[in-house]
Amino acid sequence: QNKIFAKVSLALFFFLFIFALSSPTLATTYYVSTSGNDSNPGTMSSPWRTIKKAANTMTAGDTVIVSAGTYAERVSVNTGGASGNVITYAAQSGNTVKINGFDLNTNYVVVDGFTIENQSGVGWKGVIYVNADYVVVRNCVMDNISFSSGSPVICANTSANYCTLDNLAIKNVTGDGAQGVQVLGSHNIVSNSEFYNFIGADGIHLHGDHNSISGNSFYNWFWPADTHPHMD
Image (tube, rainbow, N blue to C red; front, side, top):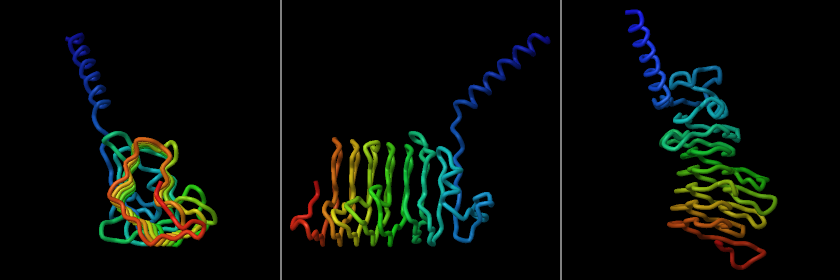
């Protein structure tokens, strides 16, 4: 009987072990508010104060919902998700959530619904820097952005492939040679976005291959150094 019990126990142990390995990780939704505190648990009733706290905490499948307000931070995202298990940074639906920018350095990340405005002296990384694969940036507004030299508002670097930039409004941009979006990688999508009120050069600056550009609008452009600002 002891031998039978031992065999059953061992079989049960291996079953539970394999089940634990194959079971999907339970996703968690966290919350950030201007009235929160980073020592809180990040729940709806006890939110965090900074998006950076969320970036340092979340794992694959997690979401953070950021409440209305202004967050004076540029968030560096270094923990990514996986296929079918992305990490999502979302502005609270129907509210304006202002932030200084994002550096997206890891795969399978979604940024949804943020406003980035009144940024000056922006460098070559722009206000959103995409340096990873399978990143989605959507429903965001970038307004009143100025550069000291030619740079993009959004830079999708050579390491950015299979990314989607969708339903963006990029407006009131100034700077010698300023660009709306710079795409250096491959198999990326820029779609359904508006680029307007630019003093700059390029709407969308393409270098990679197999990129898709569709449904975008460009108007009210001027560049003193060139009578023909363009998309290329």
